[in-house]
Picture 1 (cartoon, rainbow, N blue to C red):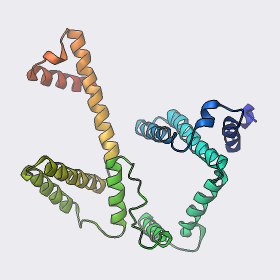
Picture 2: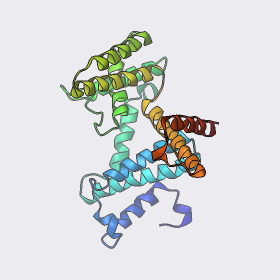
Picture 3: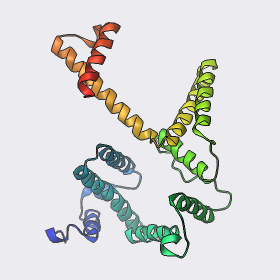
Picture 4: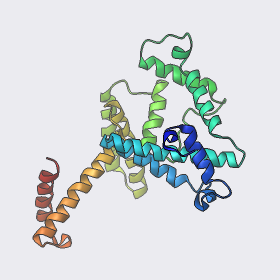
Length: 260
């Protein structure tokens, strides 16, 4: 089963996971449930996203394998409890892809990607139970910026959108004014949330993924701050004792080292 010539086959991976979950299999794997693996699935997903940002093909291959492991493991747990098995997962997504691509697997004609997305939403609406919001399928566990982007994108597909980018900018200015005018902490928090939501939409208009942009800004801050720490160690300075002027000077120096 695990001979080198078979390791590239999907069925081999399924058999390996089944063996780990067998009565005489791995104690750890046998104890796992859908709930205990939630954090693992989330972590592996973020690691895939990180490798996409890094454009590292070899690492992406590895991380996709780790993510696939989680999917197959969840399918095996479902099989062990009589819920479903990996074949049902594959059949379900294959049927959905064929059903939602009538311009490929049927006779429907489309002129561009925009029309494809319009048809996709129309087909999803037909599949949706009556009275269920088109936003309901977006997992609330998603990072807030990604969630804001997705629910905005779905609303846009049915026409809920600004006429132009100037309308988004006007909304940003309005939200900033409302933050300045807010009195209590609760009001400021609410207005700040509105501002973030509008900023996500501004990013969407510019073709920017807000989640990716913020992750990159976080990494940039991390690299620059680490450089400041390094410079302080080299010069025998303590971070806690730096003046504001020294912080500014070291930060600018760190930017020159990091951003080249």
